[in-house]
Length: 234
Ligand code: CTP
Ligand code: MG
Image 1 (cartoon, rainbow, N blue to C red):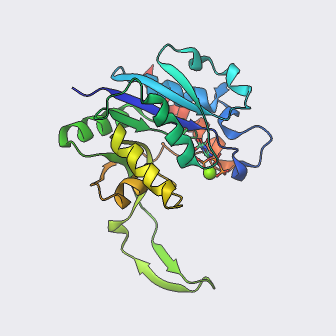
Image 2 (cartoon, rainbow, N blue to C red; image 1 turned 90 degrees about the vertical axis):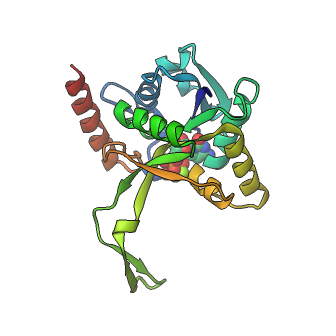
């Protein structure tokens, strides 16, 4: 069976969080956010190795205990998220086989339930098609013009919010991201690059708690989810 690897892009500056400390190092529920994210992935015994992509000038990572786990290595980040992911994939090149699977998971998603992760892995492996966790929309969705005038109401049954992890074959994802870079196109998730390269991509339903911590209000919510998840485990 093909091995499973992970890449965690953690080299962003967290502009929308507007805090001096990049959001992946802000403390929630007693530990840096990145620590929770890494624990969430390391809980999966199937994972052979995990590359954490860090800003090369960043000294704060030294305080993240899980980074010394034997399954973890690091790689230098790039200007955009996709550049950081590609850097992580390149560093897997020597150890991973082209057909191996890789999970890409945002450092900024510290509340990933193990059951969602295991579900994604088993559905993708079973069907042999890459995929991502996503959430159905509960709000009605409007498309607007430049003046914020509503152009249409979209059918939300057909719309999903993309989360991470996103799981693809190592060499296919690397090729798709390199193609995007060559064309000067910026993608905000791996699935977009795979779709544009013509690969099938499937959705696996995830949980609302797997939020991406983006703005200050998200910190309280993430802390609440982490505490609830910890209480359920004991
Ligand atoms: N990321 C990265 N390298 C970049 C940009 C982002 O590794 N050049 C990572 C972030 O650290 C984060 C994940 O990609 O874990 C998702 O990106 P996002 O939530 O947008 O984080 P930031 O880019 O840091 O935040 P912002 O867009 O508000 O600046
Ligand atoms: Mg960003």
